[in-house]
Image 1: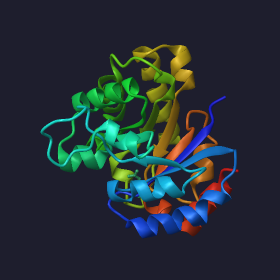
Image 2 (image 1 turned 180 degrees about the vertical axis):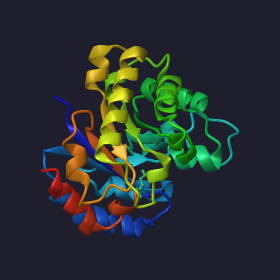
Image 3 (image 1 turned 135 degrees about the vertical axis):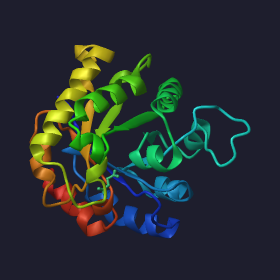
Image 4 (image 1 turned 60 degrees about the horizontal axis):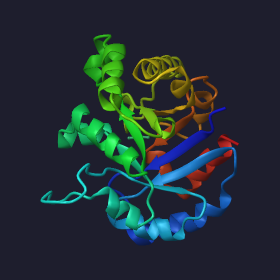
Amino acid sequence: MRKSIIIGNWKMNKLSKEAIDFVKAVDGNLHDGADFGIAPTYTALAAAREHASNLIVAAQNVHYQPSGAYTGEISIEMLKELNVEWVILGHSERRQYFNETDAEINKKVKACLEHGLTPIVCVGELLEEFEAGKTEEVVRRQVHDCLVGVEGNVQSIVVAYEPVWAIGTGKSATVEIAQNTCALVRDELKKVFNEEVAEAIRIQYGGSVKPSNIKEYMAQPDIDGALIGGASLKVDSFLEIVEAVK
Ligand code: PGA
C-alpha cells in the first residue's frame, strides 16, 4: 500500500518569517492519512526545518557535486547540515528557465540516493508536445533518462507528473489524462527498475491542483499524491487540501 504524499512547492515565494508563520499554523494540523511537506526557497529552509515536526521540508534543487567552483549552487551536504532530507529535482521551471537536462537530473538523482536525500523527480510534456500527441513519448523518455542506472533505495524516489501546460495556468489536466499518464510513468518505472519497485514508487500529479479538485485525482489508482504550487502558499488552502485527503 503506497502512502499518499502531498508537497507544496513554494517556488520563489515567502521570506523566512512567512515560512515560520506557515509552519506554525499547519504543522500541528496534519493527519496520518498522507505525508505532507513544503519546499521553501533555500533562504527559508533552515527556519522551516527548525519549526517543523510533522511536515517534510524539501529543497527545490541541489547540485550533484559534493563541493567546488559552482557559483550559486548548493550541495547535498549543505542541505543535510540543515536536516533537510528531501529535494525536488527537474521541475519544469528548472528545465525551462535554467536549461536543466535529463542527463543532469540523472546525476542529481544518483548523488541524492548515494547520500541519503530523497528526490521528487519531475517529468511532464510541453503544450506543443501535448497538442502533437507526444505526451507518452516525452514522459517515457524523461522517466527513463532521469532514472536509468540509479541504484540504492530506489523505492523511496517520488515521481511527479506535471504537464507543463497545466502549471500555474489554472488549466489542470483532466483526471483521465492525469491517471493515464501516471499509469504509463509506472509502466516505464517497471522497465527501468522492475515491477516491485514500480509498484512501490509514489507518483504525484501536479498542475493547478487545489482544494476543490484534489480528491478526484487522489481517487485514481496510479496517483499517489500531488505536487502543488499556488494552492500550497496559503495556510487556509493548504489545510483544506489536508482535510480533503483525510
Ligand atoms: P501549480 O504549480 O500548482 O501552481 O500549477 C505546480 C508546480 O509547479 O509544482
